Length: 94
Image (tube, rainbow, N blue to C red; front, side, top):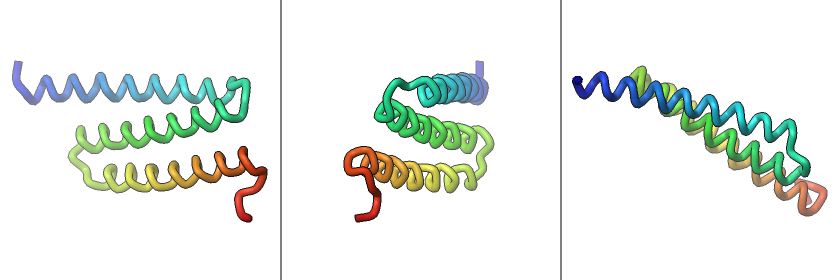
């Protein structure tokens, strides 16, 4: 078994795991009993989506997926901070 084949299997397995994780976190977003649970699930979902983009970029050898992962990371962080601030104070901009 060559190293290239092992890498392809590992990337495929990791992509399937990330898609499953995104599906489970989207279930938590829809089903979460509290707003804090939903914010935490959205935070986890953007991290999983960022990792999925990185895995696809590694598999394809395409640089644009890495830039997309960077954009997802920045927007996800800002979204999480805004949602947490809104839940704590009731407003985002003071």
